[in-house]
Image (tube, rainbow, N blue to C red):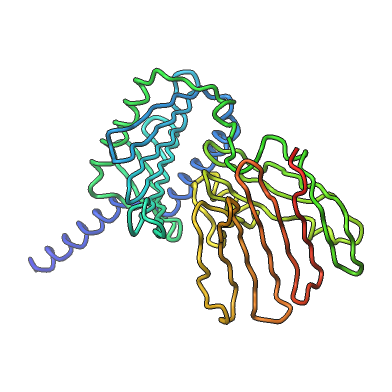
Length: 352
């Protein structure tokens, strides 16, 4: 009888521990709805917030920075970046209300120091929810919040960030902060003239203009689209040269889906199908020359960065090429199908 009572007490104790260490699905849904509502509010009002900027130099070999967004004296949102020779960490803190905080932590690790050519990155994104002195993992697959057992470091780290912001003396003009300075493009690309060749049902030669539309301008990056003016005989979808994410000296070509754009804007992470089309170093083709599949590589010649891609799974496979020059922008573009079918080629002839 005693053994049976002890067994029941043990089961009850385990059940209580499990309940205390997690949040059920119903409460999870309420919390997630609160987070999404707050994120939307921040995104809507962020240009109106006061900004405080702090260098955070003594935490790693490469240092870091903290940017706080305030409504009067109320901290609404903060971004923290810490860089090292073997990786970087980016934090997005949303200060919901009271002690309720939502955190997205983007941890990028390098397999060798970043100054050694050819290093590779691995990325881990984890979401957390703070409440009082508790910290929870946000598990969106299981729709649960699971308690972080050892949360002391999280709370100390957060307090350090907030103290650094409280002592900040530098206040940044919001408009100035959101003005992204490109390494590749001059201020006004509308002055660039291109000589174009177009082979569709008929063959055309025509001077054209490349237009740029800014999709989103972020703190230290931007998303933009490149497209051509309408050309007789060229399908509208081929006038779109693509959507791109530019950060520092790297340009990625991305699919501009709502999910991909939200991933970059809210989490600072890249969609899986992103392709590097410009960077400071050459990028070898991952496939052998005669190997069937999607090939892409980057070459650097005389200050120009040349991206090439082609699909040789079929004789009519699609190919595309971009050539970039820093301080100018796109100097050459080519795309089409095998045997030069439905092809476009444009070449910069003047950058005045």
